[in-house]
Length: 204
Image 1 (cartoon, rainbow, N blue to C red):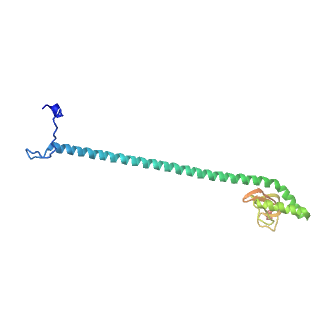
Image 2 (image 1 turned 30 degrees about the horizontal axis):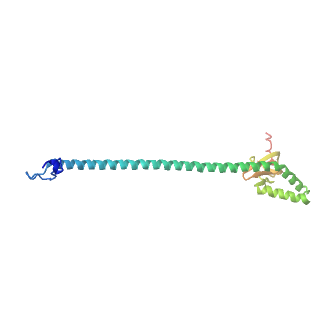
């Protein structure tokens, strides 16, 4: 019977995978070396994979730190921007209010003179009270009183004299009251100032 009739053209391949040689009884070194080499390759592949994973983790951590720093910087810049806008808004408002009130100071001076002369009566008195109340709500206040020490930062001396009744430069008369909004002086108080008497000239 031919191989074609038997249904196979090639002889079967037989592989001897026994670790011990049946003829000599010795361990087959070639097979062991091949197995050891394969294990080394697997370990090297595992080490390479672990190293790549560590490098990827470090890169991700670095990127996360950079993004976090960028976010914190943007947040700080936005916070500073909001504070600056709020500060500018308050400053503009105060400047606008101060400008309007500065225009009303001559009117308030007239009301004060009319009150001093007893002419503030009737409906005019009500109007003046309403005006003064409105300016007070906007933060306007008067300053300057007779007898207080002279302060060149808030007083403007229009008259000067000497007096034995004072021991330091003193406001002895308020010619026009001063006006301020908070700590901002809109107009200094215009005053007459008296100083202690001049020392007597030395006859010698």
